[in-house]
Amino acid sequence: MQLHWHTEPFLVISLLLVTWLYAIWTGPLRSSIAPGTPFPLKDALLFYTGMIIIYVAVGSPLDSIAEIFLFSAHMVQHMLLIYFAPTLLLLGTPSWLIDSCIKTLKIEKLLKILTHPACGGILFTFAFTIWHIPVLYEAALIDKRIHILEHFTMFSLGLLMLWPFLTRSQSVGRKSYPVRMIAIFLLMVGQLPVFAFLTFSGEAFYPTYIWAPRIIDLDPLNDQILGGVIMKIVNMGFSLTLLGLCFYYWSKKDEDDSKQGAFL
Image (tube, rainbow, N blue to C red; front, side, top):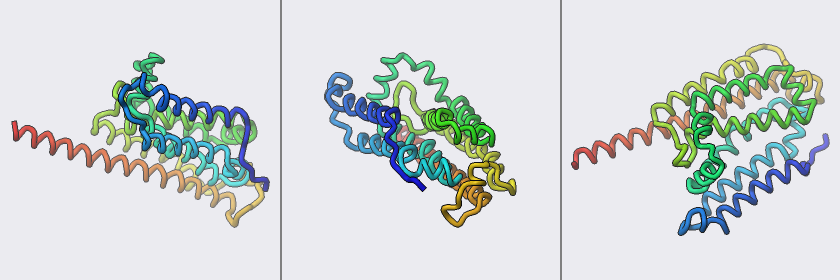
């Protein structure tokens, strides 16, 4: 087993470029974008951690294990790209920075459409389901370009999916609490077919993992089942956390509004 950290120019340059731009915008250019705003240290730590997670997902030995040996490792890789990295990047981007980028690029109308739960959720669920069809999944494992496209679509659509719940943007902001709660529930339901396909089919579907050397004591079918369980645990964990937060802040808002009404 050849485990190594990837240093492909495209990967390294892309990650360093985004990190550098964030550092420039929150550092020297901050005074021109948001005068008087202090350096967002906590936001920066979240954002940089998100970038590190992206590199761990696609540049660490995890990538080799996921690509050659274990379906469950590949699922861990996808969960990092879909949930953990986008969450940190969204929470780590200050409102003044993201709104400035949206205004400069003139993409407010487009972004409002793409980040609507009905659009972002459907696009993500469709892409996530399609990529797990054995023919496409195997094609991604064989062809590096398709593999990059797979990871890019999962990450970018993960951003769109989580935007209505986590963004700090004021111009393209979070949706109302009822809309968020309904959307979260539908996203949980949307992943059930893939989960059932992976865990209850009774057979392993992906030849790469069927014929791969066993680096741990886990046969191909149980490896596939483990991958499905990892997917559902992460999905449920994020979904239930978001549901709980939505319910808490919604009830708190109603309580504050009632107190204000009583005072008036």
